[in-house]
Length: 110
Image (cartoon, rainbow, N blue to C red):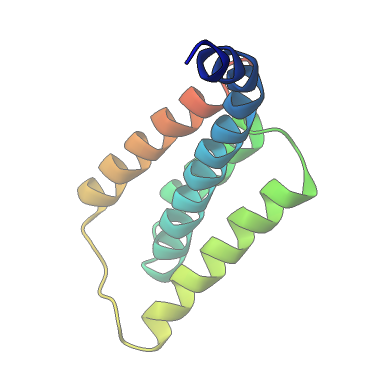
């Protein structure tokens, strides 16, 4: 039992960055999804705010940029297939605010 607790204590610091990275990826993906919706629904203020959140909060890496762009593209294309309808601006802005908070929590030092 003591060995299991000791092993967990040593493994925990290494697991935390992986969890934080996953949390950050999820937040970036959500912002990309919102960005795609805003593009399709002609909401330029929300597009600008979503991109700005990623640019100013998340680390500037190729992987983060790809996550954002892929989520944006997938979300935007769903409108072309007629699978989605545009939400009202207030609903979209609320979702964006929640995603911004999640991104800030995932990358607090930036």
